[in-house]
Structures are given as structure tokens and as C-alpha cells.
Length: 130
Image 1: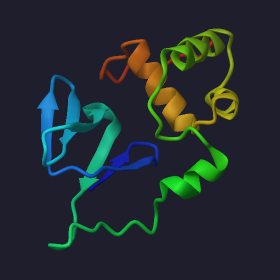
Image 2: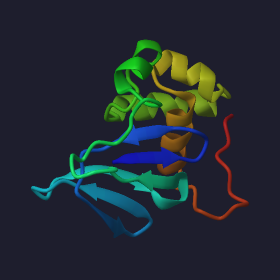
Image 3: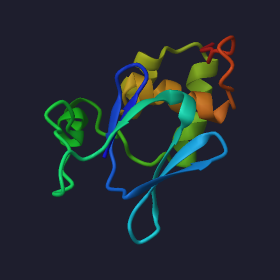
């Protein structure tokens, strides 16, 4: 299935079910492993496979293609990267600047910063850089 995020980001996940854990959608594989977690407020929609083959039309999305420009896109975050992210954001760097350094997409930078700073779903709460 394909997870579409507000702001235009996508993620492909090999999952057979979706669960809700607090304020997150949890995408679970047949064997019970959590394959991905996304804050509900960041997900615009989930595209389910069109047919019994389980295939989703992925012409608009390819991790390999995105990683040509952003080598760490969709990779797990290490604690050192999270610390660097917080330090760079506190220093006033933009998501584009941080993304170039960490090899990630600007949307991934903003999303991770929101998670680390515990930004709620209240529309008046925004992630601040600097």
C-alpha cells in the first residue's frame, strides 16, 4: 500500500493491515511485524492495492529514484542524526539546508523534527526552525 503525506511525500509499505496506536497509524505485515508508523495528522490518505495481485500503481513514487537526490530518504533515523537535526534546527537552518547535509528530503526533516519536539495536532502549533 502507499501512504500519501500532507505536503506531497509518499511511502510504500508492504503491510496487510493498519492499526491505530494513540496518534499514529501502524502498518502491520502478515507476520505481525510493524512495518511503518506515521502520525495520523501527517497522512493525507492511504492507497490500497487495486487488485488481488497486491500491486499499487507506483509510477509516481520510487524510493530508488528519490534516493538519487536524497540518499537517506525513508531510512531509519539514528540517534546521532536526530541530535544533529535538533542542533541544526536550533541554529536556524532550514529544512532544505538540513536535508542536504543529512541526505534526506525537506519534508522528512520537518516531520522528524515535529515528532522529536512533540508537536501536537493543534493547527496553531507549528514546528519552528531557529
